[in-house]
Image 1: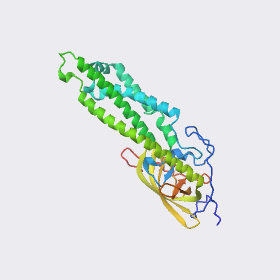
Image 2: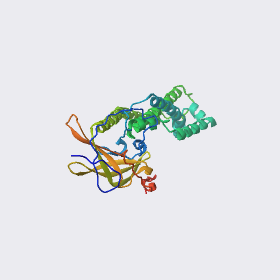
Image 3: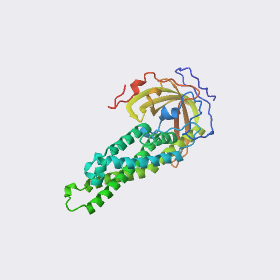
Image 4: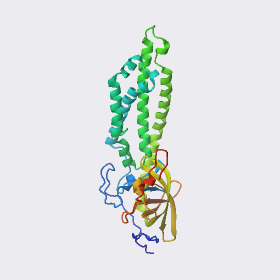
Length: 334
């Protein structure tokens, strides 16, 4: 049977693309600017990104030709800097947020003008550079998902707050041990509150530390599956049949449920998938897509895997009314 090459006439007929096994070549670092000539743009970053197996922050993408993600030296350096920054910022901010924890020496410093200036400058730097100083953006480019960067960033910030609390506890205990006898008990630092905060931060950091390797394994495994599907799968010309805006967003990506149709030698098929996209990159219903179907072996036997992507040979059009896909602070959208 001869498959019909895909075409871009936006008709109701779904064609078939010839079976094609591709090899992954030209592998590059996702951190680097893409040299791809894909007319659909860098969809693997801003969408539309599809998944038939996962939803939300677990939806994973991979730039065509790229290898599965890894922690680069730049990412580790940025994460280390963010860790040190958050230790200092938490140490400076905590006496202003929770007054009873500060020892008198720290409290006296925390009322100085320069203390406030340092805190304000730190907040400005976070607004300008981001709370992780570029780590989240680079990790998202490497691992193609929003979940793993969020776990890593939360771990670093929570651990930094834990260290800052430990420093305040050590200063407070030292003051209590050497406090003059004339100091009343209510004038002493409240180590009870510090211990409660420490317990919360410690449990949170421990939980995130346990979750991080699983998040890395999941992201890399999913990206390897994407590589395998692209290499061994059969490509079909598909079409976006239905789009349901979920009125949710994760980071800057709005969330959708979609149905995609494609034709096979046996019969036409329709699959349900989850999609996330920047509001300005939401495809119109009826736009072309590439559907790749592959049988991937596993420990529990072989199973069919479906990958849906923008078709590099048939550029899609985006909904010009992007405002209706913007999720507001109250969870609403257009």
